[in-house]
Length: 352
Image 1 (cartoon, rainbow, N blue to C red):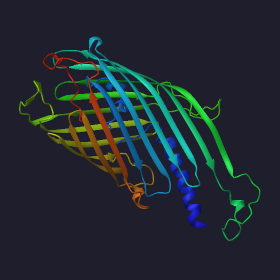
Image 2: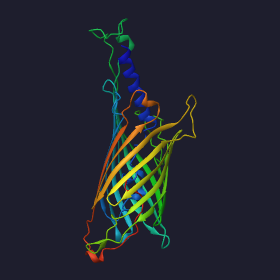
Image 3: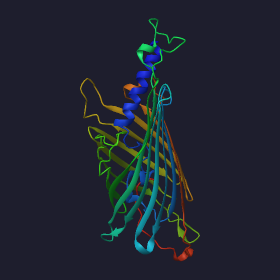
Image 4: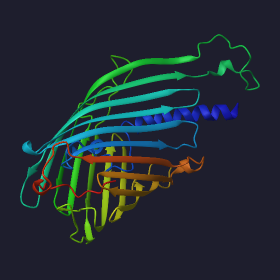
């Protein structure tokens, strides 16, 4: 009884976490999943690009929390514009087969504006459709006997607490990215229209706006002028990039601070997640995780794996951390002669 009851409480707690804090998917490799981070990244790579991204969170707990993103974007060089499409899915299965799912399908547009020879601005807009479903099967206390065991025959009470049909709502987001050859800073705001998240048509529960600020600097330690097929090979470099990302939604916020190291095709990274200066009542610290990354950049492919080492109170029941895998493929739909292929100013953000 005690074990089952503990699992039930844990499942409900994770569901609450998913609804409150997980109103938007949280990814550690935020630059690998650029279109999820901000619509300003649509077409930013000046190629056609496919991104597939997946996250498994806290696998050692009784609840299963999965997040995935698929996106495609393309840059129209003649119009200085990028367009993209992004599909986010958020799946949480708790104890007793309780299932909560989010789906977000959006289209994006970004315009690339050269402010000067050094600085470029990319404002972006996203229009999406949100869909939420919830299927819960809970067991109530009157279905247990005094020994804490479920009797052979149930009392006749309905065990299905709620099976909610899918609820769809429109969603509006925007972002902007400012960058030079060494620096970048971006801001985005998701759920600007604050769509309702209630399963009742007349519900008043609304999503809070999720504001994100990210910035960084790239220090090139070595970049020999290697040319391949008549083009500069930008994969040959050694550099370090300190970065920061801050997110705020309602009363919840999160800070990521880290460093990427790149040597030619290999990328290593590590960063800290938490808000140590903001301690909640009854807690002595506000830390979340230490993240470790290894990635490979070769040709048009970027492949990255990261692991979140939990350092919050969830380490007590051994959450198992979180695993994340990203795959990006860059290619050209329009064929340019290699020697005449236009050079574009691209953001110098890390690939992961």
